[in-house]
Image 1 (tube, rainbow, N blue to C red):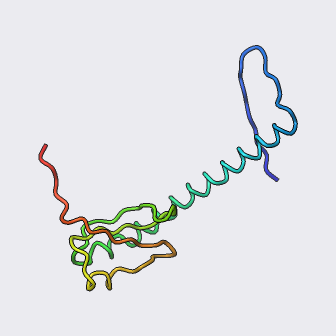
Image 2 (cartoon, helix red, strand yellow):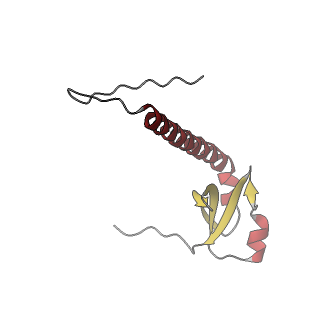
Amino acid sequence: MIKIFLSVTMGERMSLPHPITGFIYWQNLFSYWSKLRKEVVFAKMIELVLEKHKGRLMSIKGVVGVAIGKCEGKPCVKVYVVQKTQELLKQIPSSIEGYKVEVQESGEFRALNT
């Protein structure tokens, strides 16, 4: 059972929504909250996966960075390489713990002069 506690302050008057429209409102709100909660959980999980595998990925010669991104609307691991070669692609897994890995050629990263 799910209990939702809501506190609303709207001045002097507050009319309650019609029972049917009110139900649709709460149903949409719950659906949005559930989706948002799943995204937060996935984001936290992929952060842990990336932290766990970052050292191994960064130790591959030619890899200059790793990050969390979105691939086809889902969280994924992005691996940035100096130059995308077949030899390098063989060393980088296509997925890590269920998350897709996308390799992007970025060249060398350099710090900008400030």
